[in-house]
Length: 148
Image 1 (cartoon, helix red, strand yellow):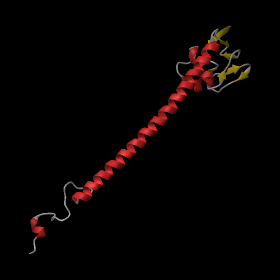
Image 2: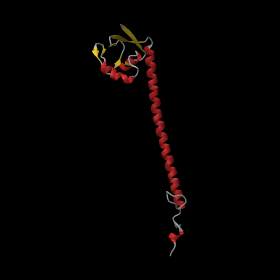
Image 3: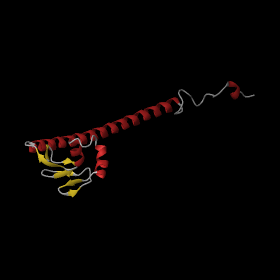
Image 4: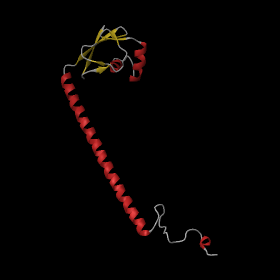
């Protein structure tokens, strides 16, 4: 028996076909299914789960024949999908650019902050790791600093 599979995109992968026809329940099972059961694509054995299936391809799975056909409005849907893909690519580039600009601004702000703190430490004569410690005061208990 021949089953017609209508697609609304340019192609469908073998894994997608197996999932759509409820032969397997998840994409992870495709690899093992194809190792155990022979699948014929246009009369030749096919075991690549990512193989692209186009309009008019015939696939025989476990004695059942599936024919790939484009839906009536497939050309419109394919054109719309291409437009959406181009928009997503443009948005991705914009996001990367915006992230780079944010990182540069953050680095400049951090450098200004470090310079300001370095200036304050120099002005107050404090060390980088300490808070309010002056270099000209004795450190430690008074007995350590006595002249006895």
